[in-house]
Length: 177
Image (cartoon, rainbow, N blue to C red; front, top):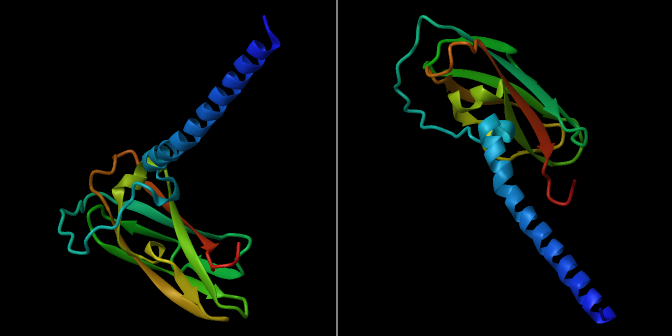
């Protein structure tokens, strides 16, 4: 066997592995989106719905919706729910609000990302209005109360009696990480 034949085989093997890794990298994006949609991670699978919802309300059932907030460590922010929990009837439209305050002397743009627990509940939480739909810009030391309007779909499995909606605020100010 000539040394060039071994080198050509090695080079072709390495090129094949490189192409395979490149293809795997592209395959990860849709795979990640599918996993997020199934589990409700990063708010995927939960879409805004029209505020003209007129579905049936399940008056005989009550679900506790808990609100949790966190702030990315790189964001000089105060962020908390105004109400920690609500008892809701599936199908009925509810409103809650969150307090956010910029603790810095700089203008900051932030984005909230919602996650849900249990993950299965994510597709049954429908928000008609939420500060998490858009990026929010805060001036130095500016504070505000931001609304969330939502309903729980009456099709929520009967074994789920508590749904936790957790928001994490991230700094998305251009030029900052």
